[in-house]
Image (cartoon, rainbow, N blue to C red; front, top):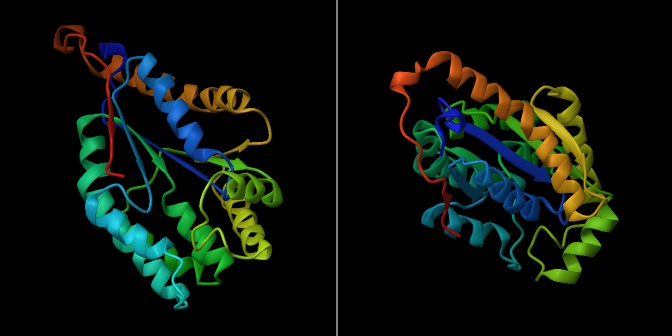
Length: 241
């Protein structure tokens, strides 16, 4: 990683959206794009990212016959998130890495808040507790008509418990993400996911570039040339899956 590409305190980017929107594919492509520029990346997901959090994920998404109360669902997500932040995300940012996370706090608000009906303000407080007030620097919401996304999802993967929810449920999730983008326009950028993955990846690169430029300028201003480390090789670290 070259000195000019070394962020002074890391950068946290989250990718959000409804089922089948392609965010996981875009997270992989963005990681490749960043590594080509010399950045050290950590690529992870929620729920999950640590051995314990992955076990919680399996319980959360299991298609068991027992109904899951919305509050139980939220508490499982938040427990996994606390472990994930403590063990993976916060240490990576402290090292100066770029962290790419497939889902984070906005998913809790969209799924358990807007779609399940839990109180948004309460969920926001619980998110702050689980993250110790850590928030993404940039969030990309991949927007796609719900019917299109579900058709994609159902044709390529085994359905989990959330995939099997009603069309109305997923429409509420989409509306939640779009409302969050209106509430937080500086942090959240909506990216149309209708086009090919290559076209969407170009839109993602355009959305991320201004933030990369900002941290490069900050590093150049704040670190004297004599104090800059020698170039290093970029690498990707993947959280447990």
